[in-house]
Amino acid sequence: MGISFVAVILLWHAWDYAADPSGDKDCSPAAPPVAASGPTINDVSCLNPTPIDSVVSVREVEDIRQAFAVARARGVKVSIAGARHSQGGQAFAARNVVLDMRAFNRMTLDESTRVLTVQSGATWHDIQNRLHPRFAVKAMQSTDVFTVGGSISVNAHGMDHQAGSVGRTVRAMRVMLPDGSMHTVSREQEPELFRLVVGGYGLFGVILDADIEVTDNAVYRSGREIMDYRSFPAFFTDRILHDQTYRLMYGHLSTAPQSYLREMLVYTYQQMRTAVATIPPVGDVSGVRLRRLVFNLSKLGSVSMRMKWWAEKHLEPRLESCPAGESDGGLVSRNHPMHDSVPYLMNRLAGETDILQEYFIPRERFEEFIDGLRRITLANRANLLNASVRVVHREDNFLSYAPEDMFAIVLYLNQTTDERGNPRMAQLTRELIDLTAKTGGRFFLPYQLHYTAAQLRRAYPEIDAFFRAKDKYDPGHVLTNTFYNKYGPLILAQ
Ligand SMILES: Cc1cc2nc3c(=O)[nH]c(=O)nc-3n(C[C@H](O)[C@H](O)[C@H](O)COP(=O)(O)OP(=O)(O)OC[C@H]3O[C@@H](n4cnc5c(N)ncnc54)[C@H](O)[C@@H]3O)c2cc1C
Image (cartoon, rainbow, N blue to C red):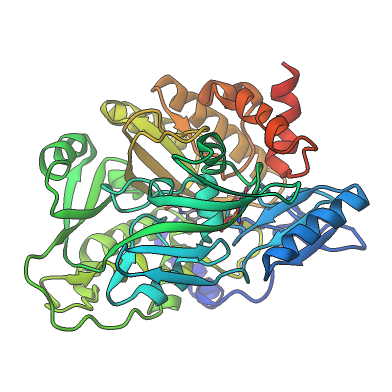
Protein backbone atom coordinates (compact mmCIF):
# COMPACT_ATOMS: atom_id res chain seq x y z
CA MET A 1 0.00 0.00 0.00
CA GLY A 2 1.55 3.38 -1.01
CA ILE A 3 2.27 5.99 1.60
CA SER A 4 -0.06 8.63 0.07
CA PHE A 5 -2.94 6.14 -0.07
CA VAL A 6 -2.38 5.29 3.58
CA ALA A 7 -2.29 9.01 4.44
CA VAL A 8 -5.66 9.55 2.78
CA ILE A 9 -7.18 6.64 4.65
CA LEU A 10 -5.70 7.88 7.90
CA LEU A 11 -7.17 11.34 7.53
CA TRP A 12 -10.51 10.01 6.39
CA HIS A 13 -10.87 7.68 9.33
CA ALA A 14 -8.92 9.57 12.01
CA TRP A 15 -12.01 10.51 13.95
CA ASP A 16 -13.47 7.00 13.96
CA TYR A 17 -10.15 5.49 14.91
CA ALA A 18 -9.82 7.69 17.99
CA ALA A 19 -13.46 7.96 19.07
CA ASP A 20 -14.99 6.42 22.19
CA PRO A 21 -17.37 3.50 21.66
CA SER A 22 -20.98 4.47 21.15
CA GLY A 23 -23.07 1.56 22.39
CA ASP A 24 -22.62 -2.08 21.43
CA LYS A 25 -20.04 -2.86 18.79
CA ASP A 26 -21.34 -4.05 15.44
CA CYS A 27 -19.91 -7.46 14.61
CA SER A 28 -22.25 -8.43 11.82
CA PRO A 29 -22.40 -10.38 9.61
CA ALA A 30 -20.13 -12.82 11.49
CA ALA A 31 -22.25 -12.29 14.61
CA PRO A 32 -25.59 -10.81 13.58
CA PRO A 33 -27.86 -9.58 16.35
CA VAL A 34 -29.92 -12.49 17.71
CA ALA A 35 -33.51 -12.51 16.54
CA ALA A 36 -34.99 -13.23 19.94
CA SER A 37 -37.84 -11.63 21.78
CA GLY A 38 -36.15 -12.11 25.18
CA PRO A 39 -32.85 -10.82 26.55
CA THR A 40 -29.53 -11.44 24.85
CA ILE A 41 -25.97 -11.21 26.09
CA ASN A 42 -22.51 -10.93 24.53
CA ASP A 43 -18.88 -10.75 25.59
CA VAL A 44 -16.15 -8.22 24.92
CA SER A 45 -15.28 -9.84 21.57
CA CYS A 46 -18.82 -8.98 20.36
CA LEU A 47 -18.78 -12.25 18.39
CA ASN A 48 -21.03 -14.25 20.72
CA PRO A 49 -24.53 -12.72 20.86
CA THR A 50 -26.59 -15.29 22.75
CA PRO A 51 -30.28 -15.38 23.69
CA ILE A 52 -30.67 -16.09 27.39
CA ASP A 53 -33.49 -16.70 29.85
CA SER A 54 -32.72 -13.75 32.13
CA VAL A 55 -30.05 -11.82 34.02
CA VAL A 56 -30.02 -11.70 37.82
CA SER A 57 -28.02 -8.78 39.20
CA VAL A 58 -26.53 -10.26 42.36
CA ARG A 59 -26.25 -7.98 45.39
CA GLU A 60 -26.71 -10.43 48.25
CA VAL A 61 -25.89 -14.12 48.74
CA GLU A 62 -29.61 -14.79 48.93
CA ASP A 63 -30.04 -13.56 45.32
CA ILE A 64 -27.86 -16.47 44.17
CA ARG A 65 -29.74 -19.07 46.18
CA GLN A 66 -33.02 -17.68 44.82
CA ALA A 67 -31.70 -17.77 41.25
CA PHE A 68 -30.79 -21.46 41.59
CA ALA A 69 -34.25 -22.20 42.99
CA VAL A 70 -36.00 -20.30 40.18
CA ALA A 71 -33.83 -21.95 37.52
CA ARG A 72 -34.56 -25.38 38.99
CA ALA A 73 -38.29 -24.67 39.02
CA ARG A 74 -38.21 -23.49 35.42
CA GLY A 75 -35.95 -26.32 34.24
CA VAL A 76 -33.22 -24.00 32.95
CA LYS A 77 -29.49 -23.86 33.70
CA VAL A 78 -27.35 -21.15 35.29
CA SER A 79 -24.15 -19.31 34.23
CA ILE A 80 -21.97 -16.89 36.17
CA ALA A 81 -20.73 -13.65 34.61
CA GLY A 82 -18.09 -11.20 35.81
CA ALA A 83 -16.85 -8.50 33.45
CA ARG A 84 -17.39 -10.83 30.44
CA HIS A 85 -13.89 -10.39 29.07
CA SER A 86 -13.64 -14.07 28.28
CA GLN A 87 -14.25 -14.35 24.56
CA GLY A 88 -15.94 -17.68 23.90
CA GLY A 89 -19.17 -17.50 25.91
CA GLN A 90 -17.55 -18.93 29.06
CA ALA A 91 -19.72 -16.59 31.17
CA PHE A 92 -23.11 -17.55 29.68
CA ALA A 93 -24.97 -20.08 27.54
CA ALA A 94 -28.07 -20.07 25.40
CA ARG A 95 -31.32 -20.08 27.38
CA ASN A 96 -29.54 -19.86 30.78
CA VAL A 97 -30.19 -17.65 33.76
CA VAL A 98 -27.06 -15.49 34.01
CA LEU A 99 -25.80 -14.28 37.39
CA ASP A 100 -24.29 -10.83 36.88
CA MET A 101 -21.84 -10.60 39.79
CA ARG A 102 -20.57 -7.06 39.25
CA ALA A 103 -22.64 -5.39 41.99
CA PHE A 104 -21.52 -8.01 44.52
CA ASN A 105 -18.32 -6.18 45.37
CA ARG A 106 -17.87 -5.37 49.05
CA MET A 107 -14.47 -5.82 50.68
CA THR A 108 -12.61 -5.56 53.97
CA LEU A 109 -8.88 -5.37 54.51
CA ASP A 110 -7.05 -6.85 57.49
CA GLU A 111 -3.87 -4.77 57.49
CA SER A 112 -2.16 -6.88 60.14
CA THR A 113 -2.37 -10.09 58.12
CA ARG A 114 -2.40 -8.34 54.72
CA VAL A 115 -5.43 -10.29 53.63
CA LEU A 116 -8.29 -8.71 51.70
CA THR A 117 -11.66 -10.42 51.95
CA VAL A 118 -13.50 -9.44 48.80
CA GLN A 119 -16.78 -10.40 47.16
CA SER A 120 -16.26 -11.94 43.78
CA GLY A 121 -17.83 -9.21 41.63
CA ALA A 122 -15.26 -6.59 42.62
CA THR A 123 -12.80 -5.61 39.93
CA TRP A 124 -9.07 -5.13 40.46
CA HIS A 125 -9.74 -1.46 39.71
CA ASP A 126 -12.12 -1.26 42.71
CA ILE A 127 -9.58 -3.11 44.84
CA GLN A 128 -6.66 -0.87 43.90
CA ASN A 129 -8.74 2.18 44.76
CA ARG A 130 -9.29 0.61 48.19
CA LEU A 131 -5.67 -0.49 48.76
CA HIS A 132 -3.78 2.54 47.48
CA PRO A 133 -1.44 4.08 48.62
CA ARG A 134 -0.22 1.59 51.22
CA PHE A 135 -1.01 -1.79 49.70
CA ALA A 136 -1.25 -3.35 46.27
CA VAL A 137 -2.61 -6.46 44.56
CA LYS A 138 -0.14 -9.34 44.54
CA ALA A 139 -1.34 -11.24 41.46
CA MET A 140 -3.76 -10.17 38.75
CA GLN A 141 -3.88 -9.75 34.98
CA SER A 142 -1.82 -7.03 33.32
CA THR A 143 -4.85 -4.72 33.35
CA ASP A 144 -7.44 -4.03 36.03
CA VAL A 145 -10.87 -4.43 34.40
CA PHE A 146 -11.54 -8.03 35.44
CA THR A 147 -13.55 -9.30 38.40
CA VAL A 148 -12.05 -11.37 41.19
CA GLY A 149 -14.45 -14.25 40.43
CA GLY A 150 -13.64 -14.22 36.71
CA SER A 151 -9.91 -14.05 37.47
CA ILE A 152 -9.91 -16.95 39.95
CA SER A 153 -12.06 -18.98 37.56
CA VAL A 154 -9.43 -18.81 34.82
CA ASN A 155 -6.50 -18.65 37.28
CA ALA A 156 -5.28 -15.44 35.68
CA HIS A 157 -1.68 -14.25 35.74
CA GLY A 158 0.07 -10.98 34.96
CA MET A 159 3.23 -8.92 35.28
CA ASP A 160 4.45 -10.18 38.65
CA HIS A 161 6.82 -12.94 37.62
CA GLN A 162 7.49 -13.87 41.26
CA ALA A 163 3.97 -14.08 42.64
CA GLY A 164 2.59 -16.42 39.98
CA SER A 165 -1.13 -16.68 39.31
CA VAL A 166 -4.15 -15.31 41.15
CA GLY A 167 -4.99 -18.77 42.54
CA ARG A 168 -1.73 -18.87 44.50
CA THR A 169 -2.71 -15.72 46.39
CA VAL A 170 -6.12 -17.07 47.45
CA ARG A 171 -5.99 -18.30 51.06
CA ALA A 172 -9.62 -19.44 51.16
CA MET A 173 -12.93 -18.91 49.37
CA ARG A 174 -16.60 -19.24 50.20
CA VAL A 175 -18.36 -21.11 47.41
CA MET A 176 -22.07 -21.85 46.90
CA LEU A 177 -22.88 -25.08 45.09
CA PRO A 178 -26.00 -25.29 42.92
CA ASP A 179 -27.86 -27.11 45.74
CA GLY A 180 -27.52 -23.92 47.80
CA SER A 181 -24.93 -25.34 50.21
CA MET A 182 -22.05 -23.08 51.26
CA HIS A 183 -18.48 -24.36 51.45
CA THR A 184 -15.32 -22.74 52.74
CA VAL A 185 -12.55 -24.14 50.56
CA SER A 186 -8.79 -23.79 50.74
CA ARG A 187 -5.68 -25.91 50.21
CA GLU A 188 -6.43 -27.54 53.57
CA GLN A 189 -10.24 -27.58 53.63
CA GLU A 190 -12.05 -29.40 50.82
CA PRO A 191 -8.87 -29.16 48.70
CA GLU A 192 -10.40 -31.00 45.74
CA LEU A 193 -13.20 -28.45 45.39
CA PHE A 194 -10.65 -25.62 45.83
CA ARG A 195 -8.52 -27.02 42.99
CA LEU A 196 -11.60 -27.39 40.78
CA VAL A 197 -12.93 -23.89 41.41
CA VAL A 198 -9.56 -22.22 40.71
CA GLY A 199 -9.48 -22.31 36.91
CA GLY A 200 -12.93 -23.95 37.00
CA TYR A 201 -14.72 -21.63 34.56
CA GLY A 202 -17.73 -21.29 36.84
CA LEU A 203 -18.72 -24.93 36.42
CA PHE A 204 -18.59 -26.13 40.04
CA GLY A 205 -19.99 -23.38 42.25
CA VAL A 206 -20.37 -19.66 42.62
CA ILE A 207 -17.40 -17.99 44.31
CA LEU A 208 -18.99 -15.72 46.89
CA ASP A 209 -15.89 -14.14 48.35
CA ALA A 210 -12.19 -14.84 48.65
CA ASP A 211 -9.40 -14.10 51.13
CA ILE A 212 -6.64 -12.75 48.95
CA GLU A 213 -3.07 -11.90 49.96
CA VAL A 214 -2.03 -8.34 49.23
CA THR A 215 1.42 -6.81 49.25
CA ASP A 216 3.17 -3.47 49.82
CA ASN A 217 2.67 -0.73 47.30
CA ALA A 218 6.43 -0.36 47.04
CA VAL A 219 8.24 2.07 44.77
CA TYR A 220 9.96 0.60 41.74
CA ARG A 221 12.39 1.96 39.20
CA SER A 222 11.10 1.16 35.75
CA GLY A 223 13.52 0.08 33.05
CA ARG A 224 13.45 -1.29 29.54
CA GLU A 225 15.89 -3.20 27.38
CA ILE A 226 15.80 -3.96 23.68
CA MET A 227 17.08 -7.37 22.70
CA ASP A 228 16.89 -10.15 20.14
CA TYR A 229 14.16 -12.64 21.14
CA ARG A 230 16.77 -15.43 21.26
CA SER A 231 18.54 -13.64 24.10
CA PHE A 232 15.44 -13.43 26.25
CA PRO A 233 15.48 -16.85 28.00
CA ALA A 234 19.09 -16.39 29.12
CA PHE A 235 18.42 -12.76 30.07
CA PHE A 236 15.53 -13.93 32.23
CA THR A 237 17.47 -16.75 33.88
CA ASP A 238 20.70 -14.84 34.44
CA ARG A 239 19.41 -11.38 35.34
CA ILE A 240 15.84 -11.58 36.59
CA LEU A 241 14.96 -15.00 37.97
CA HIS A 242 17.19 -14.99 41.06
CA ASP A 243 17.26 -11.26 41.73
CA GLN A 244 14.44 -10.59 44.18
CA THR A 245 14.64 -6.83 43.59
CA TYR A 246 12.97 -7.27 40.18
CA ARG A 247 9.29 -7.23 41.14
CA LEU A 248 7.49 -6.95 37.80
CA MET A 249 8.61 -7.98 34.34
CA TYR A 250 7.13 -8.58 30.90
CA GLY A 251 8.21 -8.38 27.29
CA HIS A 252 6.77 -7.10 24.04
CA LEU A 253 7.83 -8.69 20.77
CA SER A 254 7.90 -6.48 17.72
CA THR A 255 4.91 -6.77 15.39
CA ALA A 256 6.49 -4.38 12.86
CA PRO A 257 7.54 -5.96 9.55
CA GLN A 258 11.26 -5.12 9.72
CA SER A 259 11.74 -6.90 13.06
CA TYR A 260 8.62 -9.09 13.20
CA LEU A 261 8.75 -11.36 16.26
CA ARG A 262 12.51 -10.93 16.43
CA GLU A 263 13.13 -7.73 18.28
CA MET A 264 11.91 -7.60 21.85
CA LEU A 265 11.40 -4.87 24.44
CA VAL A 266 11.68 -6.12 28.01
CA TYR A 267 10.10 -4.01 30.72
CA THR A 268 11.38 -4.34 34.29
CA TYR A 269 10.38 -2.82 37.62
CA GLN A 270 13.03 -2.99 40.32
CA GLN A 271 12.30 -2.28 43.96
CA MET A 272 14.03 0.75 45.49
CA ARG A 273 15.76 0.60 48.86
CA THR A 274 14.89 4.18 49.77
CA ALA A 275 11.32 5.13 50.60
CA VAL A 276 9.51 7.89 48.69
CA ALA A 277 7.85 10.55 50.84
CA THR A 278 4.46 10.67 49.16
CA ILE A 279 2.90 8.33 46.67
CA PRO A 280 0.43 10.22 44.47
CA PRO A 281 -3.10 8.91 43.89
CA VAL A 282 -3.79 6.40 41.15
CA GLY A 283 -5.72 8.11 38.38
CA ASP A 284 -7.43 7.16 35.16
CA VAL A 285 -5.34 6.42 32.08
CA SER A 286 -4.41 9.58 30.23
CA GLY A 287 -4.27 10.26 26.48
CA VAL A 288 -6.97 7.68 25.74
CA ARG A 289 -7.89 9.01 22.29
CA LEU A 290 -4.29 9.33 21.16
CA ARG A 291 -3.48 5.83 22.38
CA ARG A 292 -6.61 4.47 20.69
CA LEU A 293 -5.73 6.25 17.47
CA VAL A 294 -2.19 4.86 17.38
CA PHE A 295 -3.41 1.37 18.27
CA ASN A 296 -6.23 1.33 15.72
CA LEU A 297 -4.08 2.80 12.96
CA SER A 298 -1.61 -0.03 13.47
CA LYS A 299 -4.32 -2.38 12.17
CA LEU A 300 -4.06 -0.78 8.73
CA GLY A 301 -0.78 -2.24 7.61
CA SER A 302 2.96 -2.14 7.63
CA VAL A 303 3.58 1.63 7.65
CA SER A 304 1.40 2.31 10.65
CA MET A 305 2.65 -0.82 12.44
CA ARG A 306 6.24 0.40 11.95
CA MET A 307 5.20 3.73 13.44
CA LYS A 308 3.63 2.01 16.45
CA TRP A 309 6.77 -0.01 17.19
CA TRP A 310 8.95 3.05 16.68
CA ALA A 311 6.75 5.00 19.12
CA GLU A 312 6.94 2.21 21.69
CA LYS A 313 10.73 2.08 21.42
CA HIS A 314 11.58 5.75 21.19
CA LEU A 315 8.61 7.96 22.06
CA GLU A 316 7.05 6.20 25.05
CA PRO A 317 10.18 6.35 27.22
CA ARG A 318 10.14 10.15 26.84
CA LEU A 319 6.42 10.45 27.53
CA GLU A 320 6.37 7.96 30.39
CA SER A 321 4.77 9.45 33.47
CA CYS A 322 6.67 8.75 36.67
CA PRO A 323 4.10 9.30 39.36
CA ALA A 324 6.51 8.52 42.18
CA GLY A 325 9.18 10.92 41.00
CA GLU A 326 12.35 11.32 38.95
CA SER A 327 10.78 11.80 35.56
CA ASP A 328 13.96 10.69 33.81
CA GLY A 329 14.72 7.89 36.28
CA GLY A 330 11.25 6.32 36.11
CA LEU A 331 10.02 5.83 39.66
CA VAL A 332 6.53 4.38 39.93
CA SER A 333 4.58 2.77 42.73
CA ARG A 334 3.45 -0.81 42.09
CA ASN A 335 -0.15 0.28 41.72
CA HIS A 336 0.59 2.71 38.91
CA PRO A 337 1.46 0.33 36.04
CA MET A 338 -1.16 -2.14 37.30
CA HIS A 339 -3.97 0.44 37.39
CA ASP A 340 -4.81 0.39 33.70
CA SER A 341 -8.42 -0.06 32.57
CA VAL A 342 -7.42 -0.09 28.88
CA PRO A 343 -10.27 2.19 27.68
CA TYR A 344 -8.20 2.74 24.52
CA LEU A 345 -8.83 -0.89 23.48
CA MET A 346 -12.56 -0.20 23.19
CA ASN A 347 -13.62 1.42 19.93
CA ARG A 348 -16.57 2.06 17.63
CA LEU A 349 -15.06 0.54 14.48
CA ALA A 350 -17.53 -1.66 12.61
CA GLY A 351 -16.71 -4.89 10.80
CA GLU A 352 -13.70 -5.80 12.93
CA THR A 353 -12.81 -6.90 16.44
CA ASP A 354 -9.75 -7.70 18.54
CA ILE A 355 -9.14 -11.17 19.88
CA LEU A 356 -6.83 -12.43 22.59
CA GLN A 357 -5.03 -15.78 22.55
CA GLU A 358 -2.44 -17.18 24.88
CA TYR A 359 0.02 -20.04 24.70
CA PHE A 360 2.09 -21.50 27.56
CA ILE A 361 5.43 -22.87 26.46
CA PRO A 362 8.21 -24.68 28.38
CA ARG A 363 10.88 -22.03 28.92
CA GLU A 364 13.62 -23.87 27.06
CA ARG A 365 11.43 -24.08 23.93
CA PHE A 366 10.67 -20.37 23.68
CA GLU A 367 12.81 -19.76 20.58
CA GLU A 368 11.34 -22.74 18.74
CA PHE A 369 7.80 -21.57 19.51
CA ILE A 370 8.44 -17.99 18.40
CA ASP A 371 9.97 -19.22 15.13
CA GLY A 372 6.84 -21.31 14.51
CA LEU A 373 4.59 -18.43 15.52
CA ARG A 374 6.32 -16.15 13.01
CA ARG A 375 5.95 -18.72 10.23
CA ILE A 376 2.28 -19.48 10.94
CA THR A 377 1.10 -15.89 11.44
CA LEU A 378 2.84 -14.75 8.25
CA ALA A 379 1.48 -17.67 6.23
CA ASN A 380 -2.03 -16.92 7.49
CA ARG A 381 -1.62 -13.16 6.96
CA ALA A 382 -2.71 -12.67 10.55
CA ASN A 383 -3.16 -9.10 11.71
CA LEU A 384 -1.07 -9.39 14.87
CA LEU A 385 -1.30 -6.21 16.93
CA ASN A 386 0.63 -7.15 20.05
CA ALA A 387 2.67 -10.09 21.26
CA SER A 388 3.61 -10.07 24.94
CA VAL A 389 5.73 -12.45 26.93
CA ARG A 390 5.05 -13.18 30.59
CA VAL A 391 6.30 -15.63 33.17
CA VAL A 392 4.13 -18.33 34.72
CA HIS A 393 4.93 -20.95 37.33
CA ARG A 394 3.83 -24.53 37.68
CA GLU A 395 0.20 -24.35 38.78
CA ASP A 396 -1.46 -27.15 40.72
CA ASN A 397 -5.12 -26.36 40.18
CA PHE A 398 -7.15 -29.20 38.60
CA LEU A 399 -7.17 -27.93 35.00
CA SER A 400 -3.73 -26.34 35.03
CA TYR A 401 -2.37 -24.49 32.00
CA ALA A 402 1.16 -24.77 33.40
CA PRO A 403 2.25 -28.23 34.52
CA GLU A 404 5.78 -26.78 34.80
CA ASP A 405 7.38 -23.30 34.90
CA MET A 406 6.68 -21.71 31.54
CA PHE A 407 6.62 -18.55 29.47
CA ALA A 408 3.22 -17.27 28.37
CA ILE A 409 2.97 -15.76 24.89
CA VAL A 410 -0.06 -13.49 24.69
CA LEU A 411 -1.31 -12.47 21.25
CA TYR A 412 -3.73 -9.68 20.44
CA LEU A 413 -5.09 -10.18 16.94
CA ASN A 414 -7.46 -8.18 14.81
CA GLN A 415 -10.06 -10.01 12.74
CA THR A 416 -12.73 -8.94 10.34
CA THR A 417 -16.34 -9.80 11.06
CA ASP A 418 -17.25 -10.54 7.45
CA GLU A 419 -17.90 -14.13 6.38
CA ARG A 420 -14.14 -14.81 6.10
CA GLY A 421 -13.13 -13.48 9.50
CA ASN A 422 -14.16 -16.36 11.74
CA PRO A 423 -13.00 -19.23 9.49
CA ARG A 424 -9.61 -17.54 9.06
CA MET A 425 -9.22 -17.05 12.80
CA ALA A 426 -10.31 -20.65 13.40
CA GLN A 427 -7.67 -21.94 10.98
CA LEU A 428 -4.95 -19.79 12.56
CA THR A 429 -5.93 -20.85 16.09
CA ARG A 430 -5.86 -24.55 15.26
CA GLU A 431 -2.43 -24.23 13.65
CA LEU A 432 -1.07 -22.34 16.65
CA ILE A 433 -2.50 -24.93 19.02
CA ASP A 434 -0.79 -27.69 17.03
CA LEU A 435 2.47 -25.75 17.24
CA THR A 436 1.97 -25.37 20.99
CA ALA A 437 1.44 -29.12 21.36
CA LYS A 438 4.59 -29.80 19.34
CA THR A 439 6.56 -27.56 21.67
CA GLY A 440 5.16 -29.25 24.78
CA GLY A 441 2.82 -26.41 25.75
CA ARG A 442 -0.83 -25.71 26.52
CA PHE A 443 -3.25 -23.01 25.39
CA PHE A 444 -5.41 -20.75 27.55
CA LEU A 445 -9.14 -21.51 27.73
CA PRO A 446 -10.95 -18.17 28.26
CA TYR A 447 -10.87 -17.38 24.55
CA GLN A 448 -12.65 -18.39 21.32
CA LEU A 449 -13.77 -21.99 20.97
CA HIS A 450 -12.08 -22.71 17.65
CA TYR A 451 -10.11 -25.77 18.82
CA THR A 452 -11.23 -29.35 18.36
CA ALA A 453 -12.08 -31.70 21.21
CA ALA A 454 -8.94 -33.68 20.34
CA GLN A 455 -6.80 -30.53 20.69
CA LEU A 456 -8.45 -29.79 24.02
CA ARG A 457 -7.71 -33.27 25.34
CA ARG A 458 -4.13 -33.24 24.05
CA ALA A 459 -3.44 -29.95 25.85
CA TYR A 460 -5.40 -30.86 28.96
CA PRO A 461 -5.33 -34.63 29.58
CA GLU A 462 -7.25 -33.86 32.83
CA ILE A 463 -10.29 -32.57 30.91
CA ASP A 464 -12.27 -35.83 31.18
CA ALA A 465 -11.84 -35.98 34.95
CA PHE A 466 -12.58 -32.24 35.17
CA PHE A 467 -15.94 -32.59 33.42
CA ARG A 468 -16.75 -35.80 35.33
CA ALA A 469 -16.15 -34.01 38.64
CA LYS A 470 -19.38 -32.15 37.96
CA ASP A 471 -21.24 -35.34 38.85
CA LYS A 472 -19.95 -34.96 42.40
CA TYR A 473 -20.40 -31.22 42.98
CA ASP A 474 -23.13 -30.33 40.48
CA PRO A 475 -24.96 -33.61 39.80
CA GLY A 476 -27.83 -31.83 38.02
CA HIS A 477 -25.30 -30.12 35.71
CA VAL A 478 -27.00 -26.85 36.59
CA LEU A 479 -23.92 -24.65 36.07
CA THR A 480 -23.13 -24.55 32.38
CA ASN A 481 -21.60 -22.22 29.84
CA THR A 482 -20.99 -22.22 26.09
CA PHE A 483 -17.58 -23.88 26.56
CA TYR A 484 -19.08 -26.75 28.58
CA ASN A 485 -22.05 -27.14 26.24
CA LYS A 486 -19.71 -27.45 23.27
CA TYR A 487 -16.92 -29.65 24.65
CA GLY A 488 -18.60 -31.53 27.55
CA PRO A 489 -20.62 -33.88 25.31
CA LEU A 490 -17.72 -34.37 22.86
CA ILE A 491 -15.21 -35.24 25.58
CA LEU A 492 -17.52 -37.38 27.70
CA ALA A 493 -18.83 -39.32 24.69
CA GLN A 494 -15.35 -40.62 23.82
C1 LIG B 1 -7.93 -7.54 26.59
C2 LIG B 1 -7.78 -8.74 27.49
C3 LIG B 1 -6.63 -8.85 28.25
C4 LIG B 1 -6.44 -9.97 29.06
N1 LIG B 1 -5.29 -10.07 29.78
C5 LIG B 1 -5.08 -11.14 30.56
C6 LIG B 1 -3.88 -11.28 31.34
O1 LIG B 1 -3.02 -10.40 31.36
N2 LIG B 1 -3.73 -12.41 32.08
C7 LIG B 1 -4.68 -13.39 32.13
O2 LIG B 1 -4.49 -14.38 32.83
N3 LIG B 1 -5.81 -13.28 31.41
C8 LIG B 1 -6.03 -12.20 30.64
N4 LIG B 1 -7.20 -12.10 29.94
C9 LIG B 1 -8.23 -13.13 30.12
C10 LIG B 1 -9.05 -12.83 31.39
O3 LIG B 1 -8.24 -13.02 32.53
C11 LIG B 1 -10.24 -13.75 31.52
O4 LIG B 1 -11.07 -13.66 30.41
C12 LIG B 1 -11.03 -13.47 32.82
O5 LIG B 1 -11.93 -14.50 33.04
C13 LIG B 1 -11.80 -12.20 32.71
O6 LIG B 1 -12.45 -11.89 33.93
P1 LIG B 1 -13.99 -11.47 33.86
O7 LIG B 1 -14.34 -10.84 35.14
O8 LIG B 1 -14.24 -10.72 32.62
O9 LIG B 1 -14.65 -12.92 33.79
P2 LIG B 1 -15.85 -13.44 32.84
O10 LIG B 1 -15.38 -13.41 31.43
O11 LIG B 1 -17.08 -12.73 33.15
O12 LIG B 1 -15.93 -14.95 33.34
C14 LIG B 1 -14.88 -15.83 33.10
C15 LIG B 1 -15.20 -17.17 33.75
O13 LIG B 1 -15.28 -17.01 35.15
C16 LIG B 1 -16.52 -17.52 35.65
N5 LIG B 1 -16.91 -16.70 36.81
C17 LIG B 1 -17.04 -15.35 36.85
N6 LIG B 1 -17.37 -14.97 38.10
C18 LIG B 1 -17.47 -16.09 38.84
C19 LIG B 1 -17.81 -16.35 40.21
N7 LIG B 1 -18.13 -15.37 41.07
N8 LIG B 1 -17.83 -17.63 40.64
C20 LIG B 1 -17.53 -18.65 39.80
N9 LIG B 1 -17.22 -18.46 38.49
C21 LIG B 1 -17.19 -17.20 38.03
C22 LIG B 1 -17.47 -17.40 34.47
O14 LIG B 1 -18.55 -18.30 34.59
C23 LIG B 1 -16.55 -17.72 33.30
O15 LIG B 1 -16.45 -19.10 33.11
C24 LIG B 1 -7.43 -10.99 29.13
C25 LIG B 1 -8.58 -10.88 28.36
C26 LIG B 1 -8.78 -9.76 27.55
C27 LIG B 1 -10.01 -9.67 26.71
